[in-house]
Image (cartoon, rainbow, N blue to C red; front, side, top):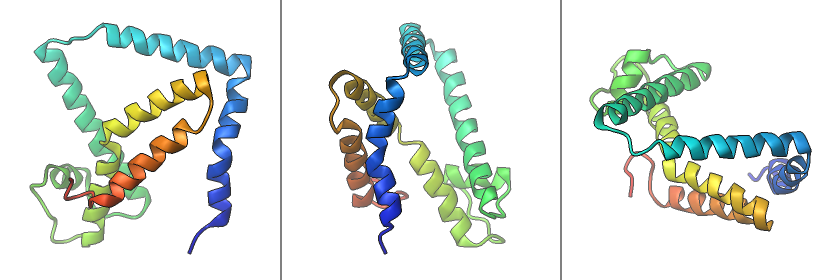
Length: 154
């Protein structure tokens, strides 16, 4: 059943974001974030040790995020179980399958770096040109995500 109130809230978001970006303090902070991001990207390319350390950090963050997100929803998976499930090596026999699928779903959604990069790029275009870029990016990713089950991939 469609949630018309939620749909209206989503439709109103570009206008709300545009109003926020007209507030000088917010614009200043967004510009600072853009500057810091550009500086961080200028430090690349990273050597092998740095790349491996960042990869380990990203993996640890994803496991902890997935574990905490699912724990809030009542999952009985432990942090170690969650890590093993995300590696694809383990299906706990003492937890309902829905918790395993929930963990994989959260991880698949958070690991979609293309969606994050596209959203950042769309925000920049939105600030420069206006229009419906953010909604277009969200629509593109929704269509792609529904085309393939998240656990199976394309």
